[in-house]
Image (cartoon, rainbow, N blue to C red; front, side):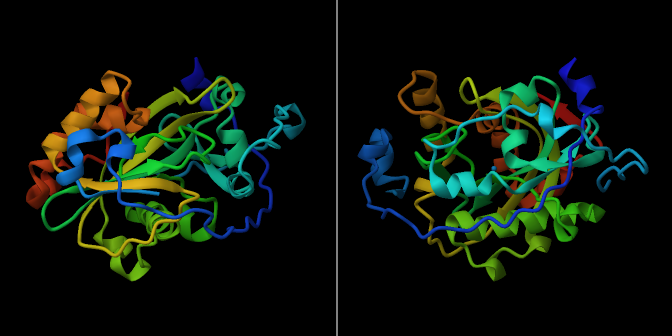
Length: 294
């Protein structure tokens, strides 16, 4: 029912101008503090996500925002609260755009349970040694804080550049923007044309009783050596891992020794290692027609 309801929902477009605060912490080189144990000497861990279906004409609607739940954000991180005003892209279960709404409304479980669904992306960046760059989300994050996840996970915004659907260029621009914001990767090092769009997954997960995720997530791959300068308000730690090291992390997560985001767990258990084995031949796995329901 929550999938069917997604097609009935849209939102009022609001203006937002979030301000990015200055970093408030620093990174150190302790993998033991991350609970990774044996990864320390091998994983380089440091402390501190056919073309798109066309939008259907005439279905962009609005809903009465007075019905949206009121949530007290006084106890949340100020910088992360500012980002809640960003406008995400609302879609139906077939990834057709139906409107926009704030990041805040898109991530409230009360709205998710009514079917609210938005676009997202997950980037998997590998270096020249074929190691995967992971990040650990900061404690300040509103959803899934302190969790390890893939290189970058975020949302395209309801702006002209990121709404553009031809060859998923809007999604790829958004990924470039967020890799700069979170990881400090210079934008010229990850141009959109070098981000390979493989496929999409559709998943839903609760972070806690108030916040959660309900996304159609575009999977983007890139292999490149990049410069990193993470924002500690976004990222608690990061590390490059081999396949063996990631399997160790997944095992630790299954024993509740570390935490991993639900979307990364789903992708890792279903697709990731097959794709990883074929970094030089990924085009054979491109599937823009199917949305994998997870």
